[in-house]
Amino acid sequence: MPHIPTAGDRTPWRASVLTLFPEMFPGPLRFSLVGQALEAGLWSLALHQIRDCGIGRHRAVDDTPTGGGAGMVMRADVLAAAIDQARSVVPDLPLIYMSPRGAPFTQARARALSEGPGVMLLAGRFEGIDERVIEGRGIEEISIGDYVLSGGELAAMTLLDACVRLIPGVLGAADSLTHESFEGGLLEYPQYTKPREWEGRATPEVLLSGDHARIAAWRRAEAERITRERRPDLLARKTKT
Image 1 (cartoon, rainbow, N blue to C red):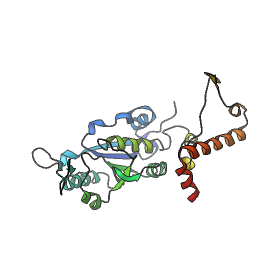
Image 2 (cartoon, one colour):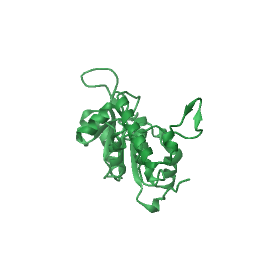
Image 3 (cartoon, rainbow, N blue to C red):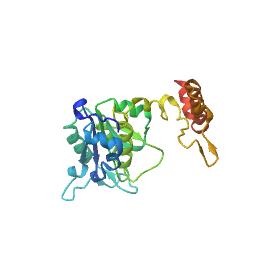
Image 4 (cartoon, helix red, strand yellow):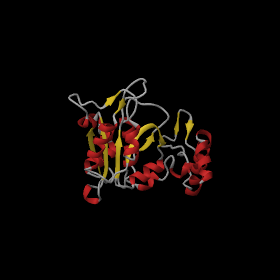
């Protein structure tokens, strides 16, 4: 098992999540190496119940959309109070709202966030949140894909997993991160292991050659081929930069 650094090795990366369902966390983040890193104190997770700042006896957090329409919208005053309360504890974290209309989440953004002090995430529900709190609290919107979920909690977990695994020491060998999909603007090359032949399908001979230069060239060519076939937009983006 790789060494997981403890909190004494470095300042923990901080994750702060505002949600109506804090019991959903840490969820899948408590398993495997990311979970071990959480237990070791390499990163921390603070949960803030938005309803604690709700209005009235029933702690209301939402209301009908102004101008009419289906569903409910989370109130600006409630969310602002919850954000301000969370920021009183950790004022220096970038604030992100998980939203399908946000900028696409990328490996580059995950790496940038992982190199900072941490992140504060707002997991919305219902039809969304009042636009005024986005403007008033300088909230960045990020999307994990072109689809809609029931709430932002699963999206928040996705973002956290992508960031935490990049923290030095979480995955063990740092070199393992350099050949993954999206690193260097390409999808990852095909991977093989034992047995050498399976159901009539053989491992490419070049991988058995021991010639590291040939293997590196083959992997690079395969990464480019797969990216060209499956995600030509990545190649186009790579060409522009």
